[in-house]
Amino acid sequence: VRRAWVGTPGVLRYPTPEQFEARITGRRLLRVGRHGKFMLVELDPPRAAGGEGDAQLELLVVHLGMTGRLGLAEPEAPPPRHTHMRLLLSSGVELRMQDYRRFGRVLLGSPAELSAAGALPRLGPEPVTAAQPNPESWRGFRGDLSLREFSRILRRSRRPVKALLLDQGKIAGLGNIYCDEACFRAGVRPTAVAATIGPARRRRLHEGIAAALASAVDLRGSSVDDYRDGFGEKGRNQHALLVYGRTGQPCARCGRPLAKTVVAGRTTVFCPRCQR
DNA sequence: TTAAATTCCTGTAAGC
DNA sequence: TGCTTACAGGAATTTA
Image (cartoon, rainbow, N blue to C red):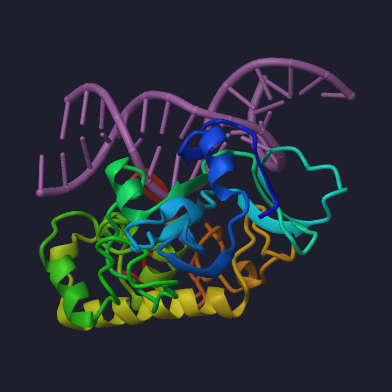
């Protein structure tokens, strides 16, 4: 990182813009991983760490929120509106983060430091094997979501199952789209009380989550709003969605119109016939 | 313990 | 046509 620039206060959650710019300038971006919806960029050890010989792991953490984008641009190109962070890299390109709704966030620090600052939430297990840049990168990382653990989470809760799936502290990484898609694939009503779902449906839901996410990854994302990948390209999974955004349209399985309700404050689309 | 409501934010679409 | 209003949602926070 040759030079760093932070705009909008609020998107940078930790530390201060001055500290951020000072701490990241001159550092190398070593590896990229993620946990849930958080992207984790591992930095080389800080130069001033000497003495202890205990090189502290530091991370650049990015969450895109609803409308966040991370991409590369020529430094000469004027930054588009809602650009909140720019890193000029030694390769001559600029890494930029934009987010017009500002639900996204950027953090910099060691896992311990970020946890102490309350900037890293505790996340549940991963429904898809996570690319961890380093096992130490996320304090309390709980590994992959087995069917056994998934069942335990469901059996213990009286909440609507979709509310549970949306809870990042229970399971990491599922947002509104993929909860609806997973429930449809499993034939589970999103409003169903989690603990009342039987073993067969739990298994189907566990599989449905994996399938819904696998589709999205294969098709490079769901560009229902303005999601773009790192190359500025739209994903294609929005065309493969089975229920999300399809209220009133025929169910892919039975042909009856899909219904809409609200669960945990989120618009929820389901098939009243196939998801009993 | 759970959950509903509120807050942040702006582009889009619907309604008048 | 042009204005206002509702809506979209991730997650922290507040209230119930």
